[in-house]
Amino acid sequence: MNPLGLLNNASITAKSLMSTLIGALVLIGMAGLAISSFVELQRADGMQGSATVLMSQARDAWIDLARGQSALYRAINLKSQNVEVTIVRVAKTDATQAIARAKATLGSLRTTGLPIDPQLVAKAATAIEQYAAAAEQAASFVEDDAFNATMFMTDAEQKFASAQQDVSALVGAAVELEKAFAEQMVAMTHARLLTIAIGAGVAVVLLVVVSTLFGRLISRPIVAVRS
Image (tube, rainbow, N blue to C red):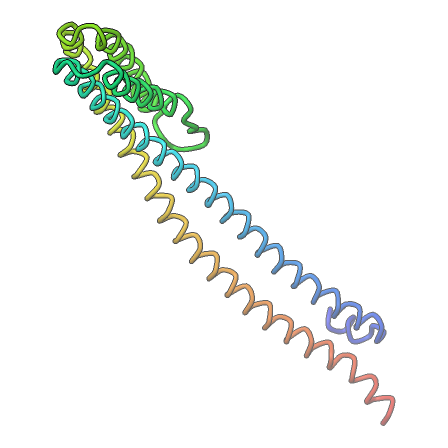
């Protein structure tokens, strides 16, 4: 039998319930679309946030690395000028603390779920560890003998250059990753808003059609009875 014929022969109560059911299904579909869009955008936002944190931490490590090297040279220079040992010690402490922060920052990076080469992170962390060991050896002579400290700084300088290069590569990769996620977030937001707008338009049209159709199906028997 023709579906429209079945609908036409259905009771007014059944027609009203079917109209309400279809309307509810349309609204549920729109809610599902909105929720799925929100979840997807939230996931993308979380990935972008992780990339931003990675970029910030890598930059902080690079800054602390350079700060530690500079402070170590300052301590050696102060010692060579026979400056009071307490002042030399302050510069030395600044150097060791900055290098330790850089080492700790690289060791605490969280890259889980991020599309970044783990070897890049491991290489930078290893390079900083090697530099930290060389810098610590040079720092151990600062308060006693500037000449010996300077001699050990030759090895530290080489390892500093290697660490700085590896950390710079990590910073560059993190910046590119954060940029890619930001662009993806913008594109996804536009796409989802367009999808929701189109879905809302289709839902409105469908509700109008369903309301009109069932309105006529309900009114026809009533008009027929009155006539």
